[in-house]
Length: 257
Image (cartoon, rainbow, N blue to C red):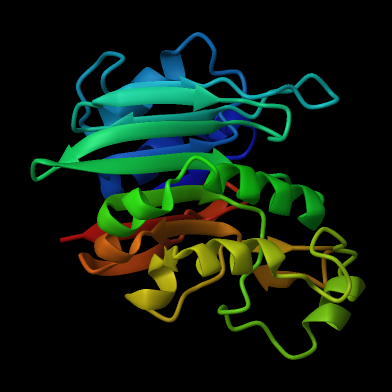
């Protein structure tokens, strides 16, 4: 499950706990864990999903600071013990990336949890190319890999209207370019990543965020669970979880058989 909780959850945190407890994911990747440095909220999330306490089950990826000084940390909670965990925060990343290894039926499962740049497709594309440098093509083809997070990029495979450019302009949304660009998602898919929500959707619901000015909002999706070829063969279903007012993003869940 991937879920951008918006500004650390603020006074919506109890609602966020209710949502993740109901979903009870085996692996949860959270974006915008702002102000979570003391570990209290991460521990509360772990308890809510039924993960044992301790560093083998929860990691807070310390993010690069934004110009404001704010850090949009990436939090990961796993009910299964983590075999390995490493946090990457090079200058090319707006925030950070958490690299994990778990065991899935005795075989390594490699997971990348991240949050890409919100404002520029050029920056997102650079981040995606750097991310792919962590993934050896031969190991990717032969192994089990997942990439989960708010990638802040739109996919041409989602059912956007033909006049998307005009709608984005009317809503005052510039982050995707004009005309809208799909370079980041195209690059990831060309490498071999498969979008779980497009492969096995449980329902027609696909958008995870309404963007733009009131009266001219546009349905968008930038939240993804992407799978390697072998792992996509084990995909049972994927769906968007409506979180109501708990965040400005809905969550995305993928169920692996």
